[in-house]
Image 1 (tube, rainbow over the protein chains, first blue to last red):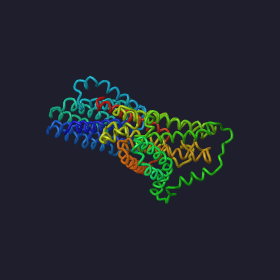
Image 2 (image 1 turned 120 degrees about the vertical axis):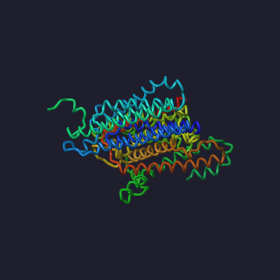
Image 3 (image 1 turned 90 degrees about the horizontal axis):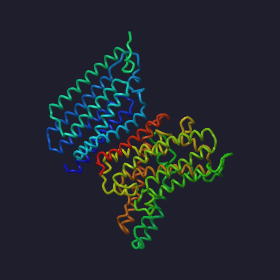
Image 4 (image 1 turned 135 degrees about the horizontal axis):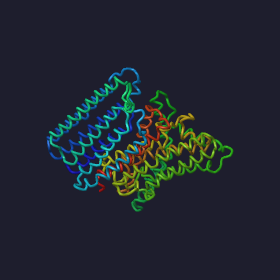
Length: 227
Length: 341
């Protein structure tokens, strides 16, 4: 793979990764948010494949396929199941499937994402200066997604959007690891992936239970004790 | 095409005259094309919509027939209006004409190339919009004021996005001259696939829709008082003034779609590299490519409108904040990923 082609494909994958992360803030529909998360998983997989091809490492490509399958296939599938679980009366389906009242409104969160992108760029300058090659230069992209993930976690009310926020952070950490060290040992990667999978499974069960007990997943309404 | 025969006749003299003459011919052709073609583009878009909605449609030439009818009527000014009302159509049409001459649609080697600056073009478009908003305010009617206020709200959100997204494109070129940017992209078409360019393309497309008042932002075919933006400002105009405004709106749409085509699908734009007959052929190819690209983009826009509903007015800032974010990310990406090199 030639230098310019490598840089271009890597840039394209990073661009898709960033775009999917930021668009999560734009959409209100939870199903669309899950789809965007799946798209980001594909972009992450593609990014690692490009890195693997560049280094001629079969092992990295295999890891990429695993990462892609987990983040673009299994996790979105689990989240969609949590979304489709039948609910016992109370809230209507339309109400439950949307992020209706985020703590910060959509236009403001988009502007906040712009600020976060600039912060990420400023913060990661020392890392980029260590070894300015195309992979390290993409680190600000991963940091932006990390900050956006935190923002989603803080400002969204639905349990499922908070799960997506958590997974955005995890995606970003994985991307940073691959971009800076070009490959974590397989054992570590496997451990992290299993951890994430378990966390999502637990959260899925929790969401279903919450819905069965309270009829909704608006976390702000769970702060007070009820009889 | 009168430009064709005269260009053929004078081609012997052109070799001596050099690229300037070819550039001049191309620019004149470009202006003529926009002046004649803008209403045709509107007609084409209406026809596409009509066919997709199962109607017969009025034909591609209908906007020209409307314009002819309006031009024959006597001009009427509502009582109590002053010079802003009378000047607005002229300023709007004038700025549209200047932008049509300046922007690299057919050729990048135009004699006005030094004026084809991103900031100048944006300012000219904004000048036209502001003139029309003042004209709407001058009538003193409720609708005129409401339309003007909404138009200015949209304008305030649109202008930064245009500036930032074309800035993202100019980072690589090292110049805000539109001709230079288009020329560089044409020399290296793979640039279009870079994240910066893709993000800027999406942002500019959204902004074009907002600026020309097409469907998710404004509905050009309705006069419903709760939702109209552009139509509310021009309610009091009639006769030749209305014709001028209708033509200018069509011309702005044509120029913006053409600019979108030139920036992101730059194939066929004449760069002025060849000399003599070669340059003339390049210009003719540029004319054909511009017409084809604009028609295709217009048809896509019209087809998209069939499947979309107008956004609530309070959701529009959200859409435009999104497009601003995309534009800003485009700038950021061109620094992140290109390493500021």
